[in-house]
Image (cartoon, rainbow, N blue to C red; front, side, top):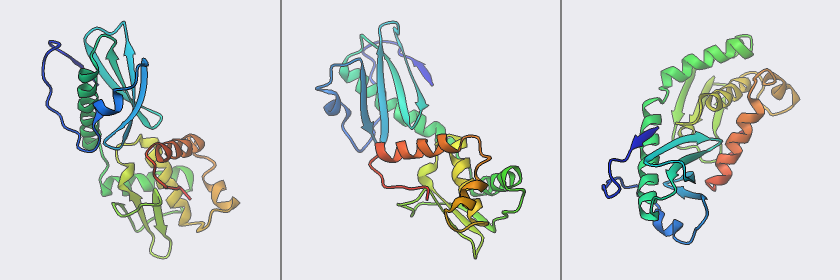
Length: 207
C-alpha cells in the first residue's frame, strides 16, 4: 500500500487512539525501529533511496512501514498511524463472513480430512481470550476468535482446519496431529500465531 506525499508540510489527520507514537519514538535513533501502535506490532524502516513515498505491508505478524530517511520523527509518527489505519481498513474489507468461514471449512475438510469433518456451524466470536479457535464436537460447532481477522488466509485456514480435526479427534494426541500433517503451512502458521501472541502480550494458544 503506497501513497505519494505531495509536500513535506502537508497535514494528515488520522488518530489511532491507544498509544502516542512520538513518545515511543523520541529516544530511538536507529534506521529500523520496532514499536506497537493500536495493538499492532510495527517495524519502521528508513531508506535513503526512498524520496517521497511511504508504503506498508504485513510480514510475519508485524506491519512493516517504509519511510524516507529524511523524514522527521513527527512526520514519521504521523505516517505510521496513517498506514496502520489504512491497512486495518483494507483488511476489514477483505474479512470473511460466517458464511465464508463455513464454506471454507467444507473445502478444507474435503482437501485434508477426506470430507469426514462436517461442522453444524462456523462463526466468528469476540469472547475468546485464551484460544484462537474452539470446537464443541457434540454440537458440531466451531468458533474462531475475531483476533484472527485481517491475518493471512493460510493462518485462518490452519485454525479452521485445527478445529475441524477436533470434530474427529477431541484431544491433542498423536492421532490429532496426524490429521493435520497434510497441511503444507502447519508449522509456519503455528509460528506466526505464537509470534503475534508474544508481540502483543497475549496468552493465546492453538491447543
